[in-house]
Image (cartoon, protein in one colour):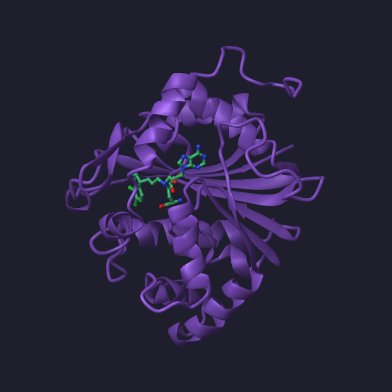
Length: 279
Ligand code: U87
């Protein structure tokens, strides 16, 4: 595999990347969802709660009229669906991806309507309201989401080809969304930037990237005794990594965690939302 244009100069930090991959073997989807996708972090009665802020950013980005094309890819979905609840109304094909079989299975369970899978109803209702629809339209949105999600694929952003060959149209995806993935799987800033550049290689020219991530975070708990290291980022680093990756920034929004959103499952201090475009 010849080194594609712009591949990182310094050799990849293979042992750092391998060490993080080993940590992820202890990732527990159910605990993870409880830590990050239940109140207070997912409290739809509060405008200063984390999830409503993320959903508002995604709604604006997907509905302001500059999104074109068929294929939306979510990079590092984890066991979560919130990141495509707005995009599924705009794109006819949605591809979910994750590194862990356990997370892909969790997604498949919800897509198959299996009893006991995570209840995304409050999320579906909230996004319906953002779209000016009645919350009772959540069933239509759930049906829409199930109709456009065509695949749940394995992905590794540290591989030259992150996705299985032939997964995407030759020209690439029309839009990428990725939330809290790259900084949570990279041992250092160089690996983060290299992963961002590789992610950009999945996108067609003119396509958009929506990136949500943690600021100032050095670890998070993926299960009671599973600590995952995270590369601490600040806004300046996010902007320079975008520039180095050939992605032009359209919008950067930052959320600072109120004290009661610091629930002891990580040391994140802020969250960034980026909308960028590939020239
Ligand atoms: C989410 N997108 O919850 N290549 O938004 C590709 C990989 C690799 C690899 C592991 C981290 C969560 C961050 C989902 C899941 C994101 N996952 C996969 C967490 C940390 C801040 C915070 C968090 C969550 C891996 C919510 C909130 C906050 C995971 C995903 C990272 N603390 N993907 N080589 N290795 N992954 O299986 O599913 O990345 Cl509100 Cl504040």
